[in-house]
Length: 315
View 1 (cartoon, one colour):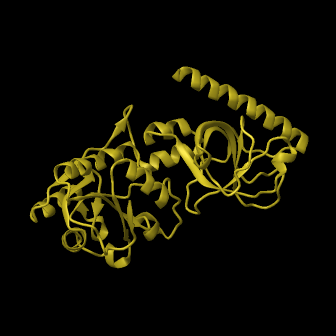
View 2: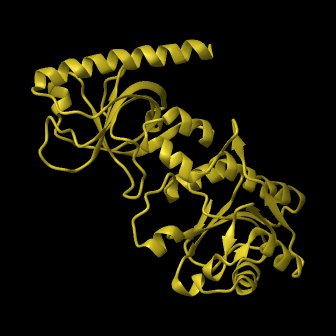
């Protein structure tokens, strides 16, 4: 997978899916499908996804917009879908001010050497978002570049979108987010040394150092399944806490701590992936460490029960 953070050098000619693609959800996968088909018909066309960095919404608002899929995670998912090149267009004032015609001519034709384009039905581009997907199709067609417009994707009569997935995660609904993503929402990070209080309480935890722009779900306790790829371990039942740990710390830093229910060992410095499956409870402050310990034990029992039920239903 080639990841480019500027316009040169691009491996071309290209078949491109164009959009923001935060999440690589089921709708995004529909937009990517024509690119794979084009590559099968034209093996010399580099199957590519072209997106924007930063996200246009963050650029215009000036607000930080955490990512459902930071760049490394996005690249890994795209590679699994048969994409070989990820182009991160620098979203600058100059790019934002291009007319739709200029965007097609200067960016898609000259720099990206596009031979085929795929976009979602709601794609907008050009100065002031003046260009629609239909405009893109017409302009590109005039330059001999076929453009596929993919209809909005729905799951159980609800439109699948990055904003809807963000809302589901913010409300502590990982099951709904997973249905729209086509996979569980995953937190991936390096295990770093923490305060080791969990070990003193009988529930040792792995502290995850996540990418700075990773979107965190609602603060609270979750049941999930963990993966330690460097040790070849997968689907380990886990309980994780996302939040500020108000009972044991006075600072306001947010942490992600993972307790592996059926595993003991050393994983410091290693990559740990955790799939969020069920929200157990909101984060809360307890009157004592004893009360916290009792609650953690209850969380572990509940997580075991939910994960066992899930496993039996899949058997």
